[in-house]
Length: 92
Length: 201
Image (cartoon, rainbow over all chains, first blue to last red; front, side, top):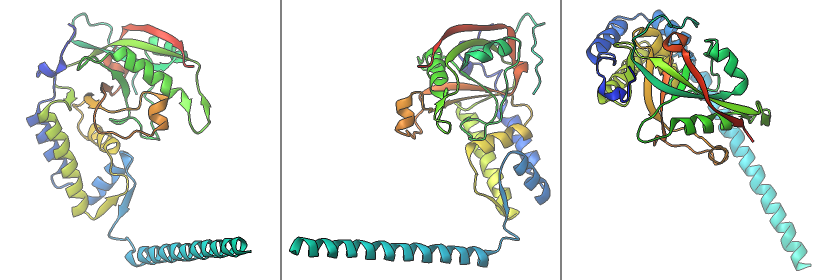
């Protein structure tokens, strides 16, 4: 039989109570290894915060910020040089 | 994914769904082989599966499927059309009892949010983190763990024209209703028919 409005066919929809039970059962006491494995199987790129090196990450961020700062200074200096050159040309 | 299509049943509940695609795929699909391709770009909104536009909120699913097929023919990386002719294919999607996660219903929306919260909590508890905690991945996870879910219904926004894509429209306000079907088992092979075709440009 053709279904015109699926929203009105509760018999075809998964039972929310049953779904909740299934979810609770899955997550109840799930081990770290299983959770990590299941996440990866679903396509997640998983980072392990237990072995995550915050110092190294912080160092990377500092280098990036420093590079950005240097780039900003170079850009500004270059712009000021161009402006000065234009002023001199205008004055001449 | 399985290619077994249940044609030996006479009485079944079904919804009509419309799939827009490269016309070259028509023969394979009529043989009962919708390919469930893995989507690396994660533009498939509800995880990997076979997608159909359905009639809802007065929308015309044939028009949506046509527009989708046309806009999807353009490959921005290759800077060219990957096919010249589109096809809109109509199918009967077999809906069995207790198999649909309907995100248009509040109870099921609550279930999805509950699942996401649980997943997040357990990840925090076990000191795990991911930089791609998005809906696509959560749907992939949910479908692998909750076996009873075979079909997901949702209202989503998707870019249906080249202008949308050029403007890089981002929206949370839906413009279509879709079904994501896990595999061919839920599609009645004899019902598969082309309802419209044409050139993409």
